[in-house]
Image 1 (tube, rainbow, N blue to C red):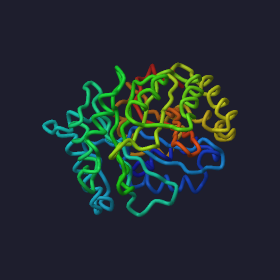
Image 2: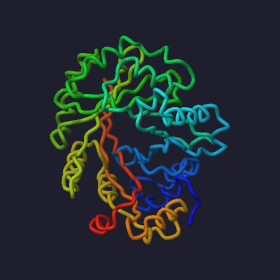
Image 3: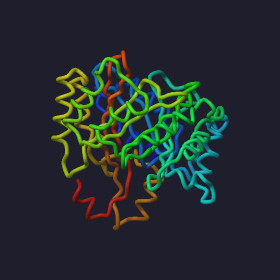
Image 4: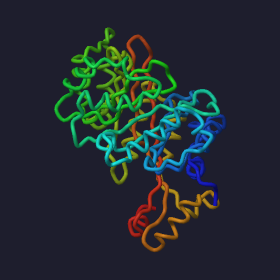
Length: 352
């Protein structure tokens, strides 16, 4: 059994990251970060869709009640504050416990990570309630570990929240901790692709080239009509936005992903080699296939659930994102998900 860290989980799924997705340099960077992190039952990768763009970023959802950060990380003040943040979210008497459901860390790996990598930090909000400006500022205060969020305009935030279309909600609030002066990232869910440009116009965002609307319409023709929208807010809404496109999870939605990637390749937004490799990513891995890579914490769980549930890793294509900034070349990113669950034995047998 391998040592317990996120690298143990990465070792199970990395054979399915083909060379077109992650070359040896990219895998080395992923392993360097994963070795520092506790095992997380949900994570994934962000990659550029075109061939010849080898950067693969890494994200995980923390077990925030007790992340178990390594002492080497906790020597850094940012990670000390991250530990306190996790404790605050887990504390039933704290305000963040009511507002936040999960904590995500994302690591930019365009360059080799430092000895103590500093992640982007996202707090997933409780979507059963409508966030107010004061709620968002409370989350922002917890996210912005270097300073108070005085660079965030309350007026701009208020506008972004008040103009949300009916049913739309802010699901994630984030900040890039490694980027000084970074804006606050708002991720909005339950917004229709046809209403994205209307909403952006209502909060003061503009695209003089009028290219964005046609790109969204073009991609949305091959995806579900409901999307997620990423905007950055500081003193105003920043120029760069992102639209996340999804395909609903079905018994087999590979034909829809295949059609979408064929369209992106045809438009020049994705490379054929990377698209083909991504389509081979989804699936399941059981302990027998992983052999010695199964980590100790999972092996103990397998003993506990023996006869009742089967321990498996799953791999999915989660979504694609159109990143757009007026005056710059648009980019498509692909997000691959991975996770571990114990599936009831009958259901697991039917999935393999």
